[in-house]
Image (cartoon, rainbow, N blue to C red; front, top):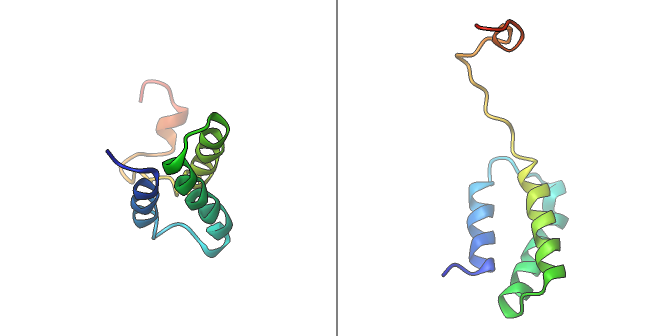
Length: 78
């Protein structure tokens, strides 16, 4: 079973290309929450961890589909 600390380490490794220095406080909060959750899972801490994780994940750049034309989104049936 993966621990919260291990999960955060995997997340940080996968996010190396898009997380910035300004994300350091949120990453520190995520790491702290992960360590605490590995010791004792509480609903409040789990909720805080989830909010922080989703906030960091939202920083990931959207993938661009280069084969898709912007007009495909506007013109129905295309």
